[in-house]
Image (cartoon, rainbow, N blue to C red):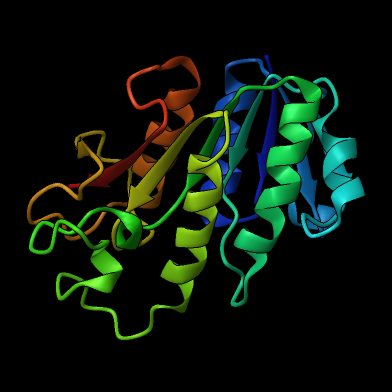
Length: 206
């Protein structure tokens, strides 16, 4: 399988690269700084580029079967600004499957079902800018014809892989407080061969 990983230099993204290479998939990583990926593998192709440049995304997307995006909001609107280019390129290449990393803020609120968590009292975060950017990206995917899945971790510290976590469609598992990076990467990677959460957000927590 040919997998394009966006955000491959991030904490989750680099672990996604390792998972895919371990399973002998061909991996393409579109990154601004190739020197940040200290991996030498004949199955890995590193493409220098920027997700905010449509032509870079189009170039990286050729011959790809599945797209995994671990892009962050990058302190701005990188996620929502790049998503139209990503969706258009995927559709033009005839790819259907995309898995992205979101945030628990864009899951439904249990206390206010008509709101997302970041819009409700359920969220403890005072700043909502990142969640708003993830929300825009979610809306763009939901309006597309793609087979998308958004993995939505809650507080995401570094830590050991535990291999035992809870997931729930559209909601954060009750009393979920955190999820380590390795478990988030593992679950996200598993979605390339799973149809369970097609066109869904999925909350993940211990």
